[in-house]
Length: 71
Figure 1 (cartoon, one colour):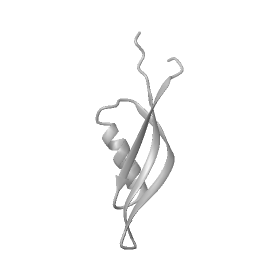
Figure 2: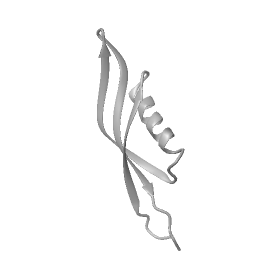
Figure 3: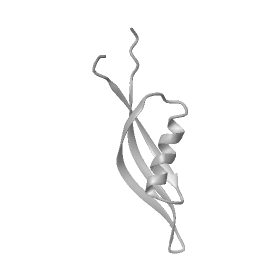
Figure 4: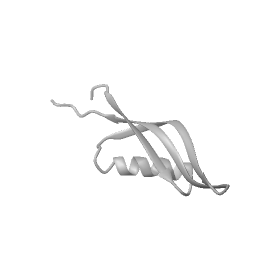
């Protein structure tokens, strides 16, 4: 096996429940069309507030997936 090479995607996941759920939503959705997702890094967090209540979490992340060998 050769040393892997990774490509990065930048995603933003959202959730009305939690930051963790927002991350899982982003990765779960991307995994439907992107193979070999191996890691992620949270690069930012935000939230939407309505009438003094947190209504939605937003998490920006970089997601790394390994490129497939063409051999």
